[in-house]
Length: 344
Image 1: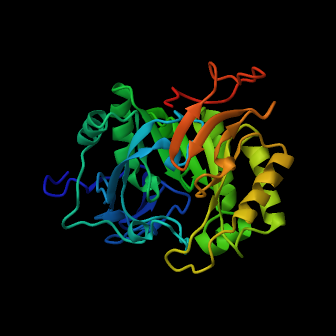
Image 2: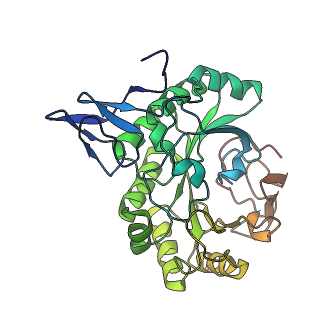
């Protein structure tokens, strides 16, 4: 490590190919990178035949956010997570809501560096219950995340990821071993949508959904519903059925409203479209379905799938009330899958 540039560190998960070329094994792009070049994400560089991350603690954003913002609705409801983001992305989504950082390569000359130790100290000082790597694709802060998670866990903090789910299974397992407690995965659409707009393979994303479940990581799924892209009934039904098959009926599914951003100018998602998706998911047997980015909508609340009782009442990013009794419905006694303490 260069003390003058601590954000440049030796990378993990790569192999040498000869002739000073390397193959990155962090995400499923598995870039083959010549000397002096970076991979697709622009955060990992081949320097003299060795791979380096340019994103270690190279922070673009930091905020103490409600866990509901991720969104996590069944993981430590009402808690606060100190959240950091880095730079760039390994997807090409033209509607990115955080494009000012996800479409920019890492700042190298005047980076804002935050060590894992200082990050965890700040989380404790701001009375957060956990950490989150978010805003841009968190997989690109892999080495930093491992160090943060191990340290945070020692101090009794939880650890979360908000991701597109395109990491290799080896990366996901190492994150889990280091202390990743929960992951929110944005599926984005069917195979055609993810290939055409994101330049990726949706089967990899669903594979990692299965892997996260197998590892025992708390899981929630998001689908940003975009008019003219992934809002047809057949597309929504396919996504819901695959969610049922891969993630399970109790895993929360969030349909969130899109707003024009970056290079995409389609109109905002009509609330009626989100409500149609919500009803379709319930009809297909999913038990915890939510509408997001529509503050005050009744479908941002949690209801008992057994008797319909209102259990967790929200407004936007705030948990207003919990009626659960020992994580059970007070009316019918149904156990509700919620992880962690409820701060309402």
